[in-house]
Image 1 (cartoon, rainbow, N blue to C red):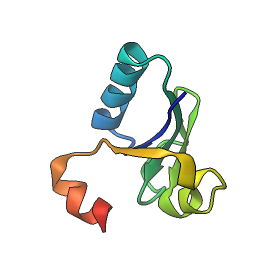
Image 2: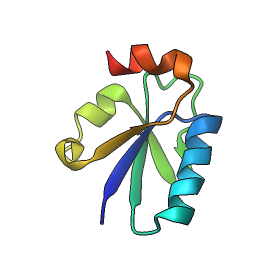
Image 3: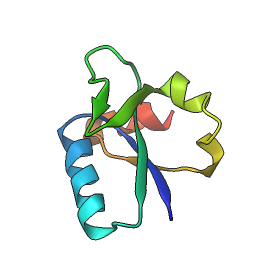
Image 4: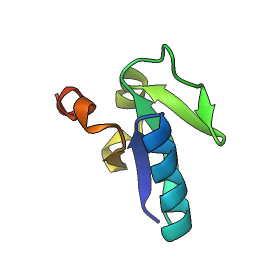
Amino acid sequence: MMEIAVYGAGMVATSVYHAIKTLYPDCEITSFVVSEREGNPVEINGIPVLSLDEFCNSEKRPDITILVAAPENHHDTITK
């Protein structure tokens, strides 16, 4: 089973989440990751939304694939 963290918590991220659940049911979405907690939900469909700091401090971080699911204008900031 592949574990995935989705970077983003907006419309793009929730659309990607639903697509993954439909097309790849064996993948497990473990969390949504955001740059800052302010203005973001606490969870999406029962999956926690973590700040980047919270995610980086989690024990599972090295084993999880991160899928960027945010508008393109945010990609440069996210990759930094």
